[in-house]
View 1: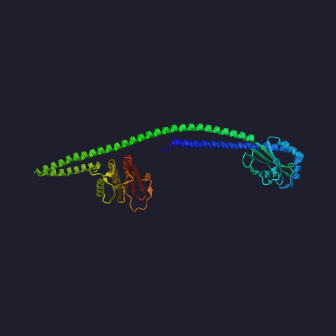
View 2: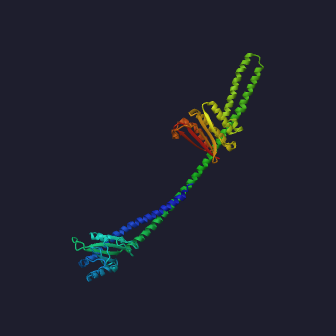
View 3: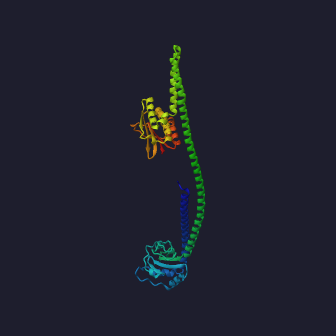
Length: 450
């Protein structure tokens, strides 16, 4: 049985957690973009403000370091430039700065070990030397995409071209690292608050939804139990109806066979005896005309009784009765032959199903006699995995076209023929299937679990 509450609880919990993670990730991306934009503007303004007063001295220094290459002795930093850099580094937001010549070689850095490094392939340097501005936000313990090193702090990295005026050629690149720890920490705190709030809100929603589904699940179970009880009641009523119908038919058959038929037989006997004692030929002729009518009435009563319920079904069993039915059918329809496959003993067939099987087979044979054109009917009754199988088929063995026709497209007169089989099978607790083929022929199958 499908566990609705369990399935929904697990699925909803996974969805709630996934939603919280996605919301956090989305906020993080938006927050990072905000930090980058804010830090870019502030860092650019800071770098330009710091560079403008020392630009003449900086240009002279870059002129002297134009041919500086890795491994060579760097030119001395002018005192005025060194003093300006010292003042700039007193700003707590400025962490580090570098100066590059046109070849991308670091000619000065507040971290002396970096002087002489070749950064000509640095994307920030390339952007600045081509007249643009390079920016990159570097998180703690993350890879620096510009420098290819791991930074220890949350830094904003800005590259600015150095030139005397907008019309002059670029002499070098000025790089400034600004500390954005406060912005990052604030973002992380806000991220944590949002994530916690989202989890709380979604958890409350999860609890409410689970309660709703739990109530719905309880209602569904109650409805299913009611349906099962009503189904069991209908099955019981159906079984009782079939039993009552068969009991009534049995009573009528017995009354006809043992009552009316016997009375007519006794009357016939008396008429015959009276005939022998009459000498008058006129009276004898009248009696002779009555005797055939009485004989026909007796035979008709017995036929009706047999149709209602053959005595052999109770006296001999189902299998002998079916053999008799098949013989009678072939005598009434000389052009048709019934192939029987009944590898069963009488005790293999449950007693309540014997009458049902008899009614089904008689009903289907009567119908096939009117519609089949193959001259052959296969009748099978066997056990398969503790299930009792009944198969009736009038398909010709040599038929090549086995394309199945949907039941909805079958001739209503043909469908009506096996409707009784479907009804009796279903009411007796079995399963019914039917197949009709476009080339002609129908296969009817019923199964009952023992």
